[in-house]
Image 1: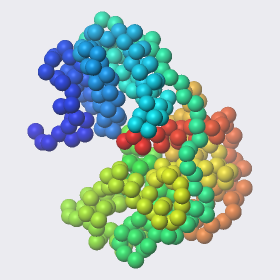
Image 2 (image 1 turned 135 degrees about the horizontal axis):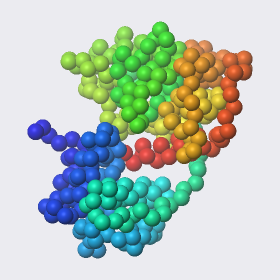
Image 3 (image 1 turned 120 degrees about the vertical axis):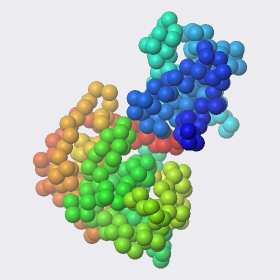
Image 4 (image 1 turned 90 degrees about the vertical axis):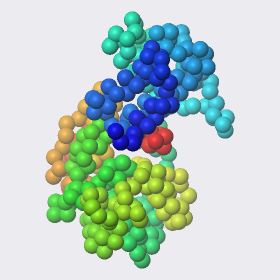
Length: 362
């Protein structure tokens, strides 16, 4: 057996000596999620949330899931509500919801597999949270200021410009950019393939001429000096020739935002928020922005049909201010066929805000 990675490396933090204890059942639960194909990041989030719950229970002498009742879970819910962090701020409702939903899923698993007689979390009401706007949005001029401030005197400068242009052009998630391969970029068709994005779903989206030009320049003049054999075709490489880590990439983007004199707090997800906002302001229908972002739905009841890559490209070219090498005003004729949907901007940006919270906690 090789060295444990991801959630497996965190199992020792749970006490599994007692075969009827919380730790032993959590191990079964996590293995079941892994077998069903859940991503390592998803399983890791359950590890973190359940660790919080197990520690709370242990302090109260509750060590086996059979001993957990609905009143105990309601006490845990009140504890989360009244808990204050180091600075005195409470846990926001999304964080409370995340902890409780993880506990709910765990006990649902136990009851379904007959490890416990009944599910104490079945009727637990989770905290509601409002729909919020993304915290920081970059204007077109701020975006250009950041991009133009990058020093391109060496291979790392070309790489960084290509990374930020790609984030701005496509609005892809941090992990989606990290996992990009060289062959995921189709210069001729001006598309980018996201493989196994959130929910392990693939999607093809447009990428602008300017971003493609910088990627091409990076590939031709910089990547060869960074790659270490065997070349695994990862598109963007660190100065050590490796795939980026999430925090490393966030620090890199923050560094360029700060160096450009932009006093806004954010990194990769700020580019995602800004791309969606600027396309919306340019006249794009929410459905097309949704397709770009890889959102399968905007709320729990509204499900939208997929649009063709050709139509998506038309809308993208007409509404994204960075799509072309030279910026042009939006072409209203390209938008005439866009159908209006009964969805609000608030739904879209609430989804983005939730993603930002989730990314910050990884």
